[in-house]
Length: 541
Image (tube, rainbow, N blue to C red):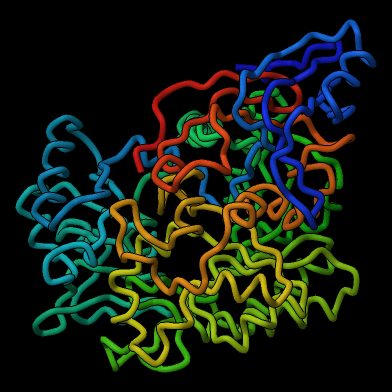
């Protein structure tokens, strides 16, 4: 389906409070209107003034609510989001048996091929123990099963998959990964970080048409939540080709800023071309690097061993020297390095690397740290001093609060999710969801940033409540903050000359309670000046 074209004449949007943010002062202003001509905003001002200036304009009466810049999803995996709709959904399972039962139901309805799924989290199960291959064997038979943990940094596989991959008691842990083991060192069925690749590389690649549909499905879901743009983190060579084909056809429903996966061949191919400065529907923005794994699977790299597993401090998924070399190359080529760093050791090293990259190319785009989840206070203050973007996902805090203290222990738990510290140090916050790790619903993320409580109200008063944000700060991080993270002056705000990417919600967004905010849905939306329709069902997360 081709992208809708904006109307050729002036369109006046009026009747709603207008969210205006100049980077210093933000708020919802009454009695204002916005004039659109084609893909751009041409004026913002008092209703009577704009009606007089544009007497022939088409008028859209919004009947209250709030008109916002459409959100930008600051960190997602679009192909993974689309694929998650086509596999076993294991999110919300209460134990390994329920997860296995869902696999059995799926296998009954889909008779051939691998059994694939995503979303399980052993930290939400009784005992918080990782599941075993034998529990999958009982429902999968000889069909290989590959089930990705909610954070994407571990996989639960069955014996058939282990046999296909040749993984046995004598198989060594790969660099940057772990094969969890049981008695006699037999593989348990859990693979962490780079060990996941031992099995995933055997799964048949999607066809060109399947990959195209996965991307479109993910983009449509984001649009249905009120996003007009997304930073897609870790795009493969095949996804890049599909995106470019869709862009040529005018078929992308929202804007895509692609961060290439850390593949030397892909970097060699792409970084020789100048980065596009125009705000279009598709552009290669930078490169996504991995420093470490995830906290939930104990792959996040910590300065000291895990409090609940003293034998490990986590993993370097990629050798720091390699990340530094390629981050400098990326910066010199005019692109933006974005480094995944969750543990405090990984964040410290990421900051060191990005400082070196900036020194190599004065005046380069501000680099990014993705997640910035566990950060020593001394390092948290470096983000603002160095001009490094803190790209964070508030819903991770409310999903992980129950078990984060066990991983870190009482002496370190204060390092978790230090959003207020980032802002105090002058850093730019950019919000995302890490979909499909979490649901992309931005209203749930906004409430998470404000309360640091999950939707059930736990923990009462919020997890480390001194790090809460105001609603204004949270809205800025989803709009102007993400625009700054992308180096785009014409996105993320409602002002003359900005792209006409606008979202209307049917409520005064500053007046809603957190519970009401979580239930909020987008009312109307304009992308590049054209009104778009919402389709399918909203995110259930």
